[in-house]
Image 1 (cartoon, helix red, strand yellow):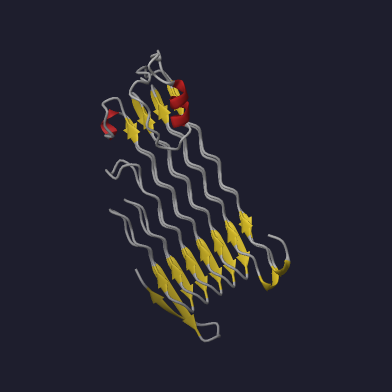
Image 2 (image 1 turned 90 degrees about the vertical axis):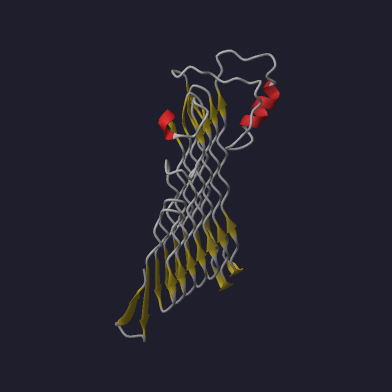
Length: 277
């Protein structure tokens, strides 16, 4: 953002979506190609017609595209007030159908930095689904970090992992399928403001075959700090506050709550320390 009496706001661009991929040994004339192409470009979890039969040859490799990273944002400096900053969202990964299918990973959310205003990191993209003889779904992208002076900072949320469906038509890891992990939440740091870590994304399927993302950490000086919540099977983020309250993020199912530390002082070089979790 530009400099002025009030600084200009800044918004990072969103990352591009990864393209879907489809592999067939022989494509039936009943499969509508226009509809198939549209579905593959619709997002990380497309639904395709049963008339479009994908390849059952495990030697074929089908790769969904990776989502692009979100752009970073730096709010403009201002005489009275700075500009806000919002990081771009990471793009979703593309899905993959056929053979040895690998879904694309979600892109990372963009970082954000502001002085005299709030900063918010971009969310991570979701991982692409994978369906084939063997299947490896894409991982969710991490949320962007946030840093603010005289403002609040909020980390971006992690993207969710993709769902993998192997040759047996199930999501069980025993058939060669691997569900995608959730992305970690972004960290947040604030000076003279509150800090909140981003939440971690969830795994593609919460059956223990993949893990969610850890919650983002939060650090605040002269403000309150709150760690981000973890996705399933992941821990919550830690929180550290100087002259403020601190709350660790909640752990997801099977995960632990995040730690918390509060330091309070009277302007001298000595602080009272209150340990939480």
